[in-house]
Image (cartoon, rainbow, N blue to C red; front, side, top):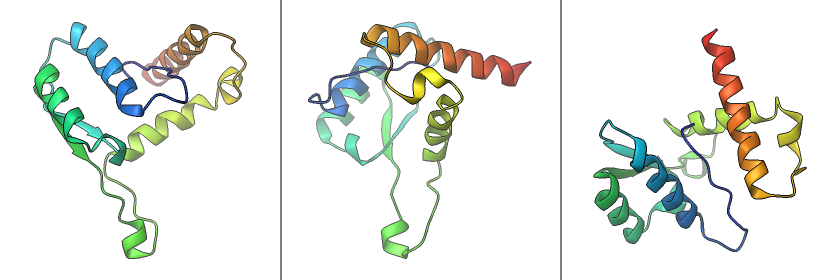
Length: 121
């Protein structure tokens, strides 16, 4: 995970996506070719914004489970779901204990950093 954003419930996911991607674009040196996303980010305004800011295309993972009537793992989405599952190793992320969004975001960053360091060492 490169970055995260915590938004109020009444704010659409694309605004959070734009916030995260604009922060990443400021310090990322390598070019980005694709941004993988789910159907929420399928709109033309978001796609054109990503093209303008990052020079990347948005690839939407299709959910084939309803069509085939069985579980079909998405090619790239499992990476995101696995990262979310790693958060449950940290008790403070299982329930919303924090009062401030900045504290929650800090705990997410600490948990992800610790998780990745544990896998490296």
